[in-house]
Image 1 (tube, rainbow, N blue to C red):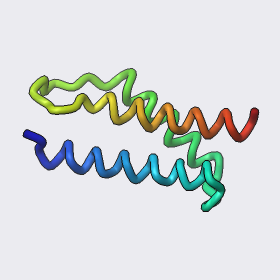
Image 2: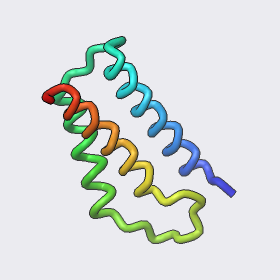
Image 3: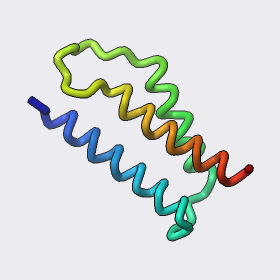
Image 4: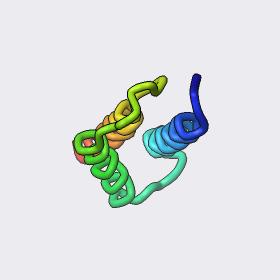
Length: 80
C-alpha cells in the first residue's frame, strides 16, 4: 500500500515533469539554471541516497531518475 510520503513524492515528480513538458512545448520559459539544478540534484539523489525501507511500492530512485532524464532531455534539446 502506498503511504503518504510516496504519494507526495510521486505528485512532486509529476509536477516537475509537467513543468519540463511545458518548457519543451515553449508554453513557459524556465531558466536553464533551474532545469540544471533540478537535474543535477535529482541525479545526485538517485546515485548517492540509499533507501533503508525495502517495503516501498516504488523505489524513490525511480522518481529521481525520471526527473533527471527529463532534465537531460531538455538540456540536450536546448543546446543541440
